[in-house]
Figure 1 (cartoon, protein in one colour):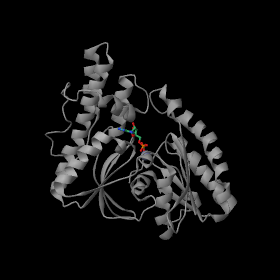
Figure 2: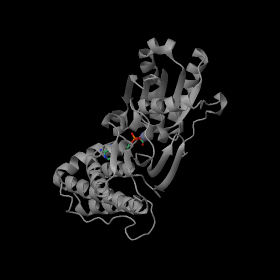
Figure 3: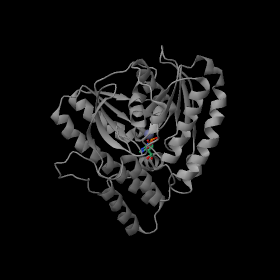
Figure 4: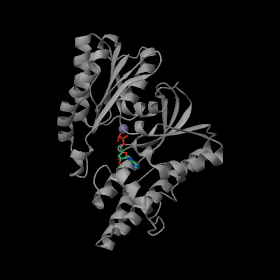
Length: 328
Ligand code: KG4
Ligand code: ZN
């Protein structure tokens, strides 16, 4: 079995995965959303302190698996450096005390492997990764064979939901609450401009849309609950339309048999619906991770580690530095 640890942002999570069957034997996650909500975003130093108590608490639970372990996997990049180091230090301590190799995992590779939890690996796929830190379209051809086709020039898709939520005083994380408000809102009330609509660039940008929303909120003054719902719905529609418009261009350049959405924001049902329509037009099969594995979790890190284990991809102890800004 492999013990995996995730602490790249505000979720402390540990999983145990059986190597031969890929079965998830144990998975637990302690989220810090409540603690950060009052600040409207993640406070890194607070997040690090919370990991320092949550991770050992979960570890207590998995002691019974220790005799069966063959490796320790840990997210080492990208993410918040002060929180990554909590998981990395725990992995190194376990590696020394249990005499096991370490598999350092890129968090983004983990999100891709959230598609394969308790399943066989399935490549090639074109993948939309939408999280709090990233918005990327990735051509995934195999283990460690990833090519970025498009990425954001500024804010990420998930981050823009967080910022809109903060502007409306709806708390953190913004994605789920903005989606909830959107459900009762009029998505056609405010006409926000789709970013980069007339640009030939296949890239994403969310900072301009965020500013359009800010100006609209300021123009409204005192907002009723209905106003908030309409702002959320109109924003969500435009943010998703931007993704779809650029994805249409990518779908025109190549035949895509298998398409997937991963990352925390892939839980958004409106976005899922729009992408489903696009895939139907092109006869493309849409793959989705289970809702509980869209946001950060150690199960996806463990699943990636199984393939790394089979490839003999172990990390040299002194090379596992936690690095905040690495991409795929
Ligand atoms: O993958 P994730 O858990 O963490 C990162 O790797 O960043 O993604 C978290 C992000 C947050 O920005 C959150 O607001 C967003 O995903 N998110 C959503 C939804 N659920 C989470 N965004 C839009 N709609 C949702 N339903
Ligand atoms: Zn993530």
